Image (cartoon, rainbow, N blue to C red):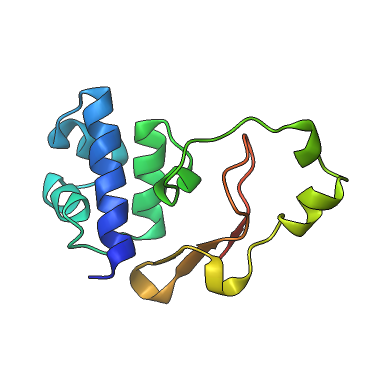
Length: 124
């Protein structure tokens, strides 16, 4: 499997553990079979968009959290919209975007350099 799928599985497992949920409990909340959740967590299954949405909702996370390696950061005054530095960093070049390939040929990639509170920019 693609390294991004293993990364996604690790993110799901970490979030489930933080909430103190068993695989069976999370699978039920997300509308998945326990076996499918196990495969996703081990990075052996390529989850559908519907599965990712169910997991995100069940874990109380945004879809962006599955792609991120860093916590959300507060916006500083120099990062506010309109500042010249914020516009240059608003969209990542294609070669720098984290990509996740899903079942059915669907590809998600982050357009922004990092998470923005309450906002998700994705190319699907």
